Image 1 (spheres, each protein chain N blue to C red):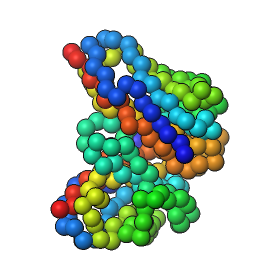
Image 2: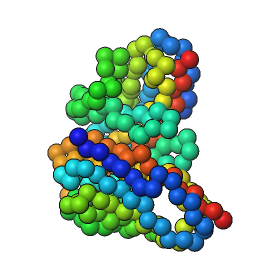
Image 3: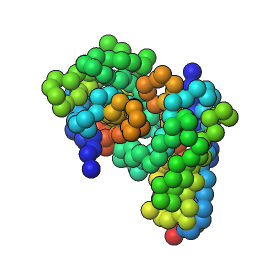
Length: 117
Length: 112
């Protein structure tokens, strides 16, 4: 069964360092997302990406964050200068276009745990 | 702004019990609602998706209902098993919207 894959599963970094989290969405999906979950808190929306551009972003997604789809399969989240409060589980998700026969169900990866020291 | 609330926050039941998890949302103008399961330290597994025009969806021992006008959904788990122990998350997508808004989840423990 197709799935969303994420790497790395866990990354430890020093405050101020750049981090890139990688995702391979399901192959025929067109909408891509990043969410995050700080330990003990709700899953929060960061950004959505469609047709090679950001379609929506949250207040959390400030200038320190960027997303890219560098080729036909990968979708990346970059944090330019990490802060302690960026420590969280980051989830990538994807879905197809909702039309007859497709529900637009959102599928999530296993997550990348980021620890900022 | 859409707010999603899940009750109870935690639930502990003996194996074999039928149980109901509740989800409410403040803005009834939704496109769909999804229920997810999350095991500790793991990703989100989609369990059921209900479109706004539907009243319920079933998958095995799981049944999810939706009352859009009152802003409520329930997840019914029949004959619970220890393997059902996990956090169950409810999330809604608004009409003409793109993102899911999540509740805080219900932590379920099924005791053998």
